[in-house]
Image (tube, rainbow, N blue to C red; front, side):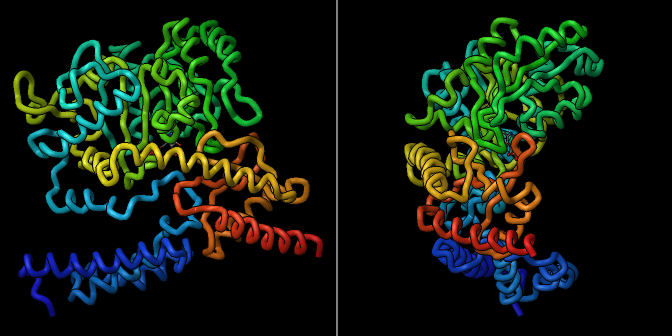
Length: 489
Ligand SMILES: Cc1ncc(COP(=O)(O)O)c(C=O)c1O
């Protein structure tokens, strides 16, 4: 048995074993040699991982650790498999995990400069870079980490949901600075497409405004906000004595991947001097693609924007930017001081802690930076362009097949479709999806658009190509034919 006090010896030996196992995992996943997702019960996974005995006694040997990892990897959703077309979770590059490994070893949270100078610097650099994409950065160069009154600013946080909460808190601080001490005034509402991500309504509830303070703006048949409906909804709110705290737009919508008309919403917000929040968790990356930039025209007119790096920038979960056009918005969001952490005046470096929901946070800037540094800045733009193109290719392929129906031309890398909606009910479309993923051959998702159930693909894996589309179509057809046959019995 290994002596676990011999740390230096173990570190190398265990790391080498893990590296070998991960390398094998990546190779086999990418070659499609393993199932995408092998559905097992949690009880059987618990048995295989020997959760209880490892927990009580600790790992006894390297063999024991290896066994645990082999079983762990077997029970993962294999995102690197080209037949993974599921949720909006980045398919990382082979070496994307290194910053998490380093962070897990040195444990330097980056919210306090003193606790993680390198991580905090990388965060500030990446925020400057993101602000530059929006035209919000007014510093001299990307190493200019000072905050200027006329400049934009931002922070990284753990995910889009917390990011939306942060941005909406900034919006509230702008319209009602007293809310921080007095509680939320009862007359505040937030307008946005009825298809806004649920984290918007959740944020509003968490902020004590009540979910009903979210006022849905009508959407079209593909669930895109109807800009001409904004006026009427707004006037109705004024009539009811409400104040609009923020207007939210989708870039893009979670279910369909379609973009709201950001310029039209910006016009409306400017006219009435309303806070404009763009939820760009998935689609803000269109900014990086010359070909797809058009989709986010007007994004730079927002007051706040959230942008997930763990969706379309190949960064392992989680890492999201909250960006503000004006630095003041960030300063005023949370009016709280902790004498042991928030320093005033001339200290070296910069702390993001005063501006985030979290106190301690992971080295998020490191992961984000690393994703670009692996292959260079341009590689992420190329990835975005290619994945948007993948959805268009799949759309074209499905459209040529008489059994498939796509309700819209994709604008991002998300595509919804149905198999013979004239024959299969909503329930059967869902059944089709479950039966498909039960095979372990594919992983796709499903969603409802205007009350109709769709199969949903998110093309995150650069290896998914025509061969995979053909196999997907064949498999769906095979399962659907069986469902149809069974109903006719
Ligand atoms: C538009 C949009 N906003 C917010 C979120 C929430 O992001 P996260 O999963 O990072 O919390 C999502 C997640 O899919 C999303 O699609």
